[in-house]
Length: 570
Image (cartoon, rainbow, N blue to C red):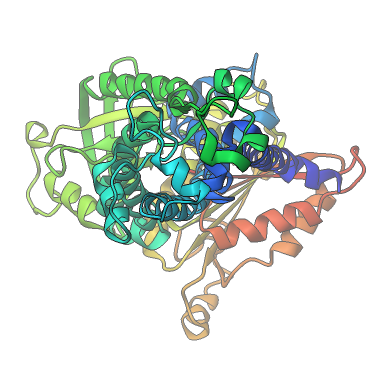
């Protein structure tokens, strides 16, 4: 239970607080519209649908306040890098920013659905009340405002029945029109954010996600029409609705209750979202400023397995291990930015990324860099590149542990290239101040081509460790997951050779997938009483497996071994 708190506790705590605030706001605002006499006559027209519309509206304000904060990358990187205000546990929570962003988005979708359905009933009943026969309280309330010097409670002033009246409200009233627009924008944003769309049609995801600008503009002005109306405080002093409603036919006559007066609720959404909107505007201005700074591509390397390496330089660029950047290539697209993990080390005089060619944009970048041509490409012919970043990730914390497990799947090995390079540089110069004492590195790939571009780095690190009589510092296991038994058997006959026939490394390539339970138990046995960082850049299924193993193989005793799971998210 102890390590469950360390691995998941802060996240669970934040989620429970967030859910609790949503429940509190919903219940508070539901009661605020369902009980007070101020909205007594509004409830006569609309019933419980009034409170059921206003309660989720309050939750929408709260969640729309939160939705932009997790994507203020510069702000998060600043907080993450500030040890004064950001502990290790808080940094690990900041690393889950996109997970929280998605949760808030689904909560917005839920409350939008409740709010919309409730208002559909509200509009239908408001329209119906205007054409209702005289003699009912609803008809009397709806007629208020038809005469001079009267204020109205029913916002619908036409005498048109349903369904035409409902359509009239939807497309001529500010609240109706903005409600339709922001609901459609939200539907497009959410449906294009699924994993399938993001991976296969990233451009669709990218462009539709920017409908958030329309969403927020519509959200801020949505309540400006003040269609939700309640009795004024002055009117309540002289007209008690819980008594006067019984004699509504005598309102305004001598000795009877005066005619009630009403006013609309002032728009409140802007008060909730103005702060985050300002922060996000500053975020975009910083990104724009950084994207205008000159970036020079110094080298393009074509690696096997449809992977290219871009080595770049930019004045004032500083990075830490495992960080990532956003890259834009105007020759491919003037608007699209794509995230890539930095594969260079902070000690190098350039920064680099590895790009696997898997879609239209990466194919365009491949061609723009001249990688589709056989002849040598002159440097001046290389495309212009804009870079935003770097931004912090979980991998930055690698050097805060004495023992770490690094797990990369396929191209997901890139953040650990930066880590291992930095380790190599530190050992070349002075490793006496290095807290990190042991690395367990796991790389899972489907075929042999993916190994080739990374093998040179591992060979250099392997040789460096042996020269310094510290060969035990790095234990690495490379797993070939896409081969069948007959293919693996062909290479097993060479198992006794000094170097592996696939990678050229002393450590032999393994076939199949790791038995994670055995791996965790073995490492736990070798490092009793340690806090072991587990870092993954890979698919969700593997993340679930490693997270469960981190929890189950950690001891309840605070002095025992604890596995701390971290995953790359960008």
